Image 1 (cartoon, rainbow, N blue to C red):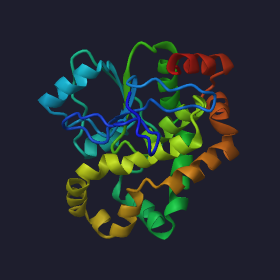
Image 2: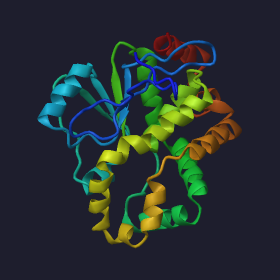
Image 3: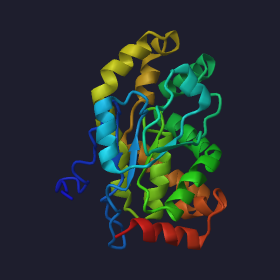
Image 4: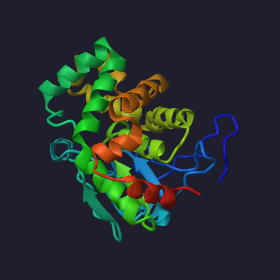
Amino acid sequence: MIVNSESSLPYPPFVDIEGVINMRSVGGYATSTGGVVKPNVIYRSGDISSITERGRGQFSALGVNVVFDFRADSEIKDYDSATPAMQGVKIIRAPAGIQNAFDPASIAIRLKKWQIDELQAFLNTYEEILDTATEAFRTVFIHLRDHPDQPCLIHCTAGKDRTGMFVTLLLMVLGVEDRYIIDEYALTTVGLAPSMPHLLHKLQKMPVFRENWEGLLNMGSSKPETMVATLRLIRAKYDGAEGYLKTQLNLDDEDIEKIRGNYLV
């Protein structure tokens, strides 16, 4: 593994899969106890429904055989983005949080909040995800506990918020230092950059987004200060990631230690 000496992040973290946005390995990060998160075992990304034939070959080469899809059923239907079947890959639907968030009225309300106070809007959204995505998150953590030999991909639409909250909890539980968790979250800005012009052009055709462009741009950000505040939220409300896994996901100390043993070297 090559490490970028300026940021101490795995370099490059991103994986080139044609037709998939914001895909990267969640690994290589140092922990406060001197360990390192195993690279190239857990991946995160945005929607994979546009994967090309070339992308399928690239994906197969990674050895990923389980994909967890955090998107809502209505979201997949509205955007006509069902995940295609891929040979040797098990797709697990695990809708994560933010119920009824994708109809125009709900989108308009959320965009207004992002326009008025971006940071608070993110904190409200992330708290809602943490409170309502427990079944989905538990499903993935159980997989990580029981199947460390099965590389997996976790994704939502942009690979930013729902995926980001899961990855934040995972890195916290593994003992990764805050500065790396913050940097990892902010990498989504880099990961989405190539697809952003196309995405904005597409959204501009929809009145609900066109009418509050400022709110949309704020909603699409992934700033370091947002993750700083989110880490404070997780520690204040749930007594940290361990507390969250115990009280919200019904996992215990033995489960947590097994996950650490599976993914730390």
